[in-house]
Image (cartoon, rainbow, N blue to C red; front, side, top):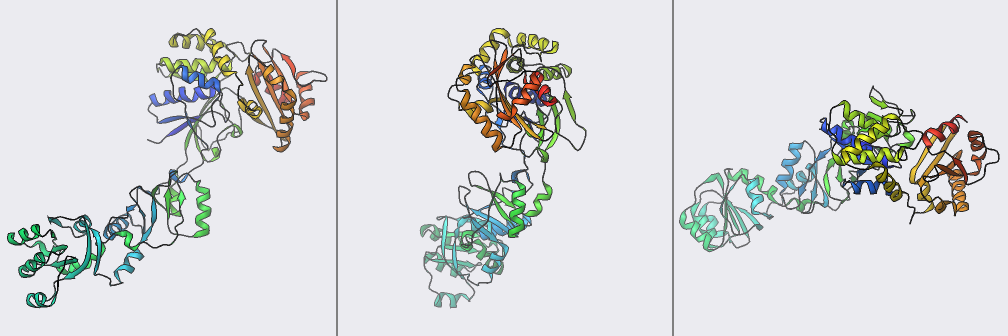
Length: 536
């Protein structure tokens, strides 16, 4: 079953992270194969929540571009350096591919062997030298073991083509010889007494027991094959180790995590037939050709807590969006076909997911209820935000019962744990919960920090303002603001780049607004800040 990735926006908050997990659990119960993911590191509050309920962090998903690993390339297609040329030929022929990657025992790529290399070796007429293993010979010759003492078989190949008397009188055998012959018992006797390395008995002929006894005493290896002497001789050259025909030619490889767009560019420039595919540990996974791109499959994704390209994963336009669950305004995401799009004006995406559980009669486990509760409490500031609806309140009451938690006490502890800015740089504070919004002539950036100690930021106000101005200019924003929401005073301080002043004055009806201005009762970016700024 194909995987489907479920993820929230690029700067995941607690509602985004927990929504991905809770919806993934629901979808899997319905028979899907989904994986919750995040697009960047999670914040302290989310870490606290997942640790509290003993739930694993979602996987990190850098982007949803189609990768080489998503293609139907020829996977698990390699041959070990110590396998035979015959095995390499067999694998290539079976896969209808004219090349195969050669690897060591750790799957490290050593090179490539082609059908052309094998043909070249066959026409070199260098048949006499043998360097292979006992097992390789048995496989290539469809043989059977008779006597075995050595796995490594190295030596000079001879075929008993003369009549017996000529052979016995004129051929000097030694421990370095490998002999192919039929049931010529006098030559077999001569060979085992000469302690040759290996005897190949063709036609599956019988060998005398007395000769077998001498072979065992002299440690002579013997193999039987059903092939004729001619067939055996023709095949035997293919028994050698495939590494024996490796060249020092450089090989152009690709990585399974490369985007297919990059692979297409490389393939169009180099025009090679095949490219070995390596994983992130540089282990060879198989081989790919340009035509494999035609069989690519887009990643299936479900979006939660957002529905705009600007806030989503890189490469989303190349993904197959099959569903969206969100509580924000309708954004820029478009699809090629109708999908399930659940959008409700509630305080948290988890409230919608709670509704989906009820509609599908799926029981909510205690730990899933706990993280869903956390997402709602985080987004509604423990049900005090103006975004809070009756459905949020109902969901909190039901989920807190399932999780067996005093939601007010737990919510305060969660926000306290998550509001710590200790050890964070000013950039990390700004991007802690940061979103970009498209406007008519460009874009704006709005960060929000929810804290019980706003002085941690306001005491360094000038440095934050300088940062906002620099980012606004370097990234071509119309303006950037950082909203510092004080959970104890139920209001928000605002810091902004200099080009935001007039917009903020008009949006909040304030004359001569100053940096660090406290906006009483303003706590929701989604409901109290975004609409006003977007109207301006």
